[in-house]
Image (cartoon, one colour):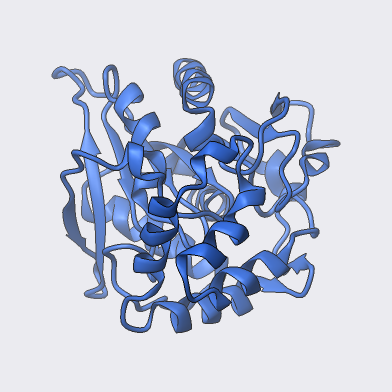
Length: 279
């Protein structure tokens, strides 16, 4: 799960549209260049109810050395509301179709929350397209999840209520502002948005649990994999990072919550840089 970026990181975005083979449109932002040298780009995927601007701070930092892409999944942001076949597999198919549409043969895949399960599924479905995986507070690594958060989020109808709903996601209460509540309310108020998100939530989650757990398949991947987690995550518990295959590097962020790409962007970007170098 996830949310739109805090307003402070959302400025200066220049986005483009990609048309998938099935006609759906995905919005994305590309930053950085390879300097004429073939470089596998970094592709960043948000989580439930999020958008590409979740990665704004990380994308700015990483694009100084790497070509980077951040996209809106189907049903989110400026992308088509059509979820396709739906669930994590359907979103993974859309991600792979996006890579084809923009001409990316292989990429360092980065996913936050539900986006983590999406990039895992994409890498398992088409291993040749993954140069590495970075899973940030990721779904798909255990059954437990606070699905009550989804119900509260989709049921909130005013900025004040939304601010109350969002508060547990952040370590810094100063980020929960009226402006953030207005931003999220605007994102949820688009035509059909709540209904689409409700449908996606029902496809991906049952009360208190995730429908798809991929942790036992991580050992199938022959590329570097790392897991990043805030120890105080109230949506997806950090204990799901325990007991993963030995080759998976685990990095815990003490005192941080669910929104690491926003609150710990420098640390997240540094670890992505390191796995890119290794991959």
